[in-house]
Image 1 (cartoon, rainbow, N blue to C red):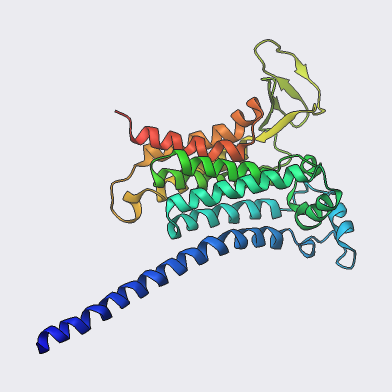
Image 2 (cartoon, helix red, strand yellow):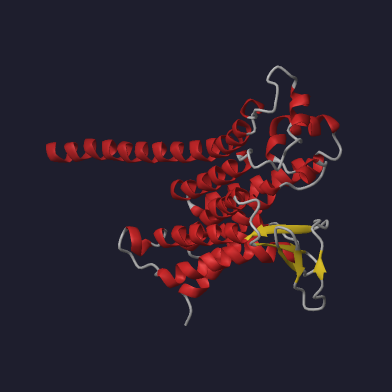
Length: 315
């Protein structure tokens, strides 16, 4: 009877410990679910802080700050958008290790929908538009300042959301996110570092490709082989060959070190698959996005991870 009593008293204690650990796990997960989106939004606001811009008077009001940030928006000295781009992508990358994939996909989907609604509401509320520009204006390109225009952040979220939803291999999906986070900013930074380089080209959404020299522009379209002028036509996207090379090298390294075979000995992919991922990222960033007029923030994570997954699972 004594042994039975002991068993009877120990079983509830073990059950309480099991329940306690389960509750702790649930609390941690829900804390991440609530805090992760808030942390990402706070990161955007922190990087967009007017105090980070040397051209802004910290004593001026927020509306003036938002207006001042429209000047010199593409200056090579202002890298805050690229820093924000890389840190946000890196945040999503690390969150993929902390949250279940199903939960991450739901959070991304809800965030994308809310950002779409927010940008739609900017068209109807001048107050919301003013507050939006005051808080996040420095992160926007010139055309994104207009009410109702979807910013790059929306396409960033939408691309990662579809990647998380559609790509079965989580490792390949993470590579797409990393290439998005670092490939594009590195390409832009290197391209700005060589502003006078004649090794560059321009692309228009009408299908034209121009080799751009320091003093001349050569039109190499199939149906028009004439030599153009120095002025840049509207709608053209200038791409530096040095920037494309930097994007390729960065994406290749990221894909290669992200292979499970590289860091923990599991079955992964080799340099050939990393080469496929790097080529896909570079082509999407340098050519395809301008040709079809779709933001490369949307194309890169989906296209890169899909190419890597398809190559690794070829018959």
